[in-house]
Length: 179
Picture 1 (tube, rainbow, N blue to C red):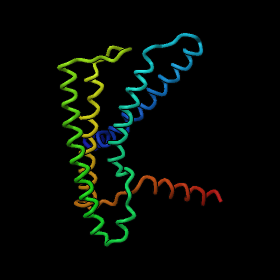
Picture 2 (picture 1 turned 135 degrees about the horizontal axis):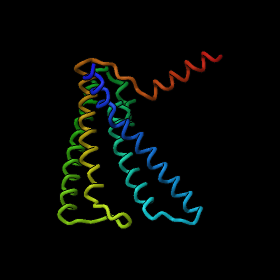
Picture 3 (picture 1 turned 60 degrees about the vertical axis):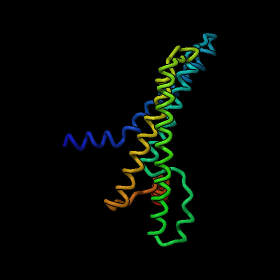
């Protein structure tokens, strides 16, 4: 039972991080507005909100990869037999993994460069190598999630539900129940 809970937590780690970051940077921006209205500018809120938003976006991209919910043009695959569409999706995912590898490698190089030649953020004096860690972290997580989705779909034969379609179906069902 404990293993299932741990696996479930790990399976949704990006979701929890995104929820925290969204609430965090929303609170920071709200504080910034309130304090400016009171005539007390908080110099650090701009950087904290910006950095947390960037981290939110990159963890969100990883979460979308986990849900297989990245925007893709799929209509052309409907013209072929499902196996042909699946092969092209695998090729597209292989290209995506290669792109992620480049981003992880270049992100790592940038982090190492910023550690060797330190550069700090203007307001908070944070070392930017720590802020830029999001690149190798998020693209590594995204690669893991792409592989996970493909294993689920093609090896374990799990039918993945498009979250947007599921939401539309839930809305239609709710609407039908109310009528």
